[in-house]
Length: 211
Image (cartoon, rainbow, N blue to C red):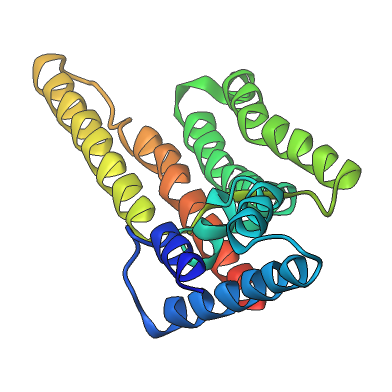
């Protein structure tokens, strides 16, 4: 059944032909061939049978992306809960030291008026993610395969932001005598970005292996 072979190979025309992909192609071809043969045995022509099977299969883009390793189904609410949870824990540690620094400086108890609201920026996303996980613990979503370059991008972004903060702080100290060194706070705060990207990547890769 050459028509089936041409059809299936056409689905994978833009995908690198690895041994795993060739195996998937053979399995899909065999599955379609069996269904076509069943319809032929019932009196349908091969051409009509193949047309019917293709219509029954519908849009195969999701299947192809999954088979080729471009996308994978992940427990999205579980991953988001774990990732924001890691961010919240980091936020607690980070803001604890910020509070101490401001408290021992010139602010005293007033430092809490800054750090407690800042902590809600870590806490609220975690609470919402936790609620979604409790409501839909098995919810899966088709996502792009987790890539290490997302971590690299976040680290690069963190570096540029940190560099700008440090330069601004140095210029402030030079131009305004008595200025304090404050840039460590945004530098440490923005580190949340690559931290959460790393946690998401590690957990997602583990789930991919389990699947």
